[in-house]
Length: 180
Image (cartoon, rainbow, N blue to C red):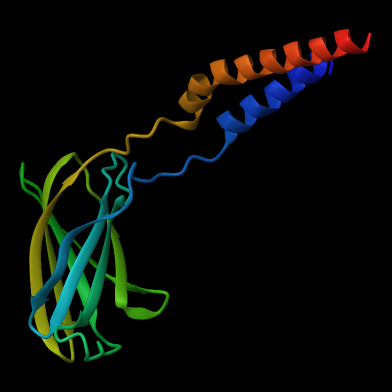
């Protein structure tokens, strides 16, 4: 390979890393804040990915998993959950959102709410349906997404890419010497 081909390949890789679309996600997987708590006629689990955003986008994600309290009764199709969050460390208004079923399954419901700062938030999930009304309280600490941006990731990876290119260059030079 020629130097020009190395330069083009390196430029293409760097361009891809810098220009790739940035995905906004929490640096870890969702985790449970309530597991199998019985409230009324329901067994409720709440999973969350509590990302904080400065631009008002709904980064705090909540999944509500519903079952019948005895695990044998089915949850009726018109059962809905409402998630309400409120900051615990400062004055602020509560934010509320109604969940939507995930993949049309009433037993798994999802909502995303804006969390405007890092810190503790109270979380209240209210279930309303033909089996009655129930609610569960918990809390979660919201944090910023800790992953570096794509541009910064390119800067971090650049020394390794350059080292790899140098290594390939040395291997190709050795091969040419052996063949000559």
